[in-house]
Length: 319
Image (cartoon, rainbow, N blue to C red; front, side):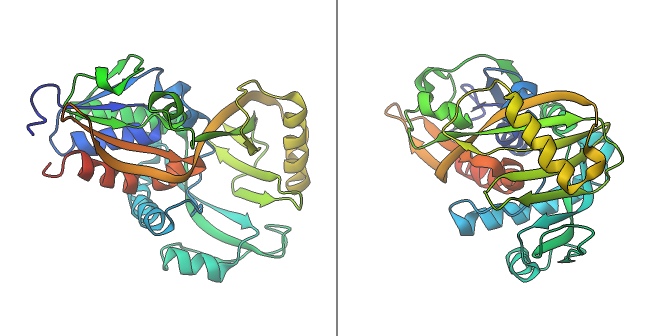
């Protein structure tokens, strides 16, 4: 199939998965168009705290490969933080054992050691340096990189993949796949965070309470992100004031200087969670190809580049 003719490749969705996949395809010399219901700045990806971390998603072996490939790419991008929005930042991850993380990461994480009590209150915590991505800068940078490679971005809704005028379609619609392709196995897991003025926190911190509540502090340029929540099956995008207060309270318990920090914004996103990432090629009755590429949950940033490379290989095997 000559995908350079007759419409090339259309990537549906402009979150971090969709844009990264489109970039990989376009930089292979293919004609790529991104169709998106809303601009990248209004997707779930724009709300992400965006710390690279080896989240456990299925399929585990593939996710590990995708994550480590992405880690190498983020390290290269971190050489130009002001342009790409990617920085390498030190911090502490609670409820983690250095030996377990080391086994997963295969020696690729620097400064990996057990965190001190001053760095993290949990008995089991690791201190390391990880990519921390400012999505407010990274998503526009991805879009600009796509445009430089000859791709295009169009704001248009897609209600049926059969109506997309391209021989190859890559479905990166995340939670939208529930309606677009009738996949009831992908569900929302609601995440809420609070944006405050940074009182001087320059390292990240992640912890989970005994009740299973996620707590994190991510310093981004000009602000500090406080989180978070993980509400399975909740669809509301309206910030919950009570949850916001609880987030600030939990973060202040870990970093007292956060108490009283001026609140700049409240954000909510719906993570597209699925029992396993769907990354597979399908042939439509008319002979066209669809590559389904969604269901990454909260690990979209972690696996974006590695997953995009595999999706591109499915979309254009000879490209």
